[in-house]
Image 1 (cartoon, rainbow, N blue to C red):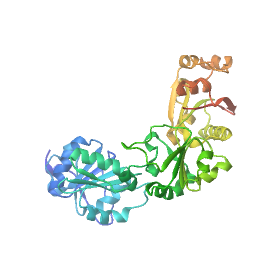
Image 2: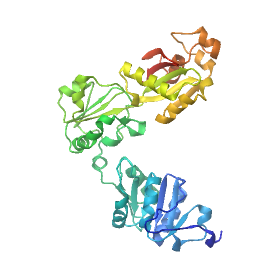
Image 3: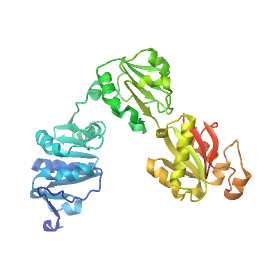
Image 4: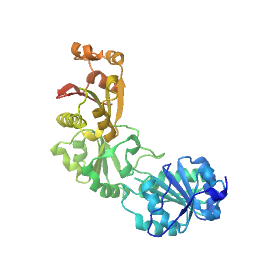
Length: 381
């Protein structure tokens, strides 16, 4: 491949450059040594796009998918920030801090930023260490380069619970009502104050350090027991909507929603996504369950192309599972229907689909019909 055939991005003041984003991460270098490390790293880091200065071109960049640029690298960041989950920058820390300052928006949306020094001795987590994943990315990059990872967030250094990431690897989310409490509760954790942990559902193997849990983090069997102990802060993990008398636990607490609710759904052909979502919300509200804790929707395979169901599952990122009539008929159900069998070949849809997915013999809701939708609800152990 001839060097002159390679497209070069010309960085110009006031113009956001046109980049080719194919991976989740961007790796950028502006020095000779940085380019050497980048070319080595890209072989071990396939989910990344590589950018470096045109003056260091080797002639094989087009073939390797490397994007060359001319001008100030500072002008590249307005394009990189919204496009990538993480940036790995072979640029000095001070320069990076100055260059990214104008494009910073919010810790919930900014990408993770990792800086590597020009000799590859240190990989430094600079921005969005938790929510943006920079701490994890720093460890991965350091391991690949044989560098020392530098991470300064208190929860990582102290080997305790990162409040804003608690349960994230399992898909847990915090309830919107708790967002303003993330910072004060995090302060209680890292300042080694008494923090109560109550878990009613969700994965139990959330402690991820190789050291014992600090004595200041105390597990309680119930919200009532935790409130009686008068903790400084609390972490509550449940799919359940809290009762009014339990709400004071959240005065300085974060409420997490684990993905533990399985839905079985049957519906008439052409039922709208709006109707399906409304039935789900009404049903879960009636059970006192959180909509945020839904994990999956199960149904019969003749509904695999049902646009209303597909749209709701896409909207919320739920797993969508379809079963054959034979698979559904293998389940022991409480309310078999000859009418349903006549039209589908299965003696039920919502109940057996929910049981099949969840593995439960007893559901929280066997079956409820509302308009064009029939729904069953199970809570995973």
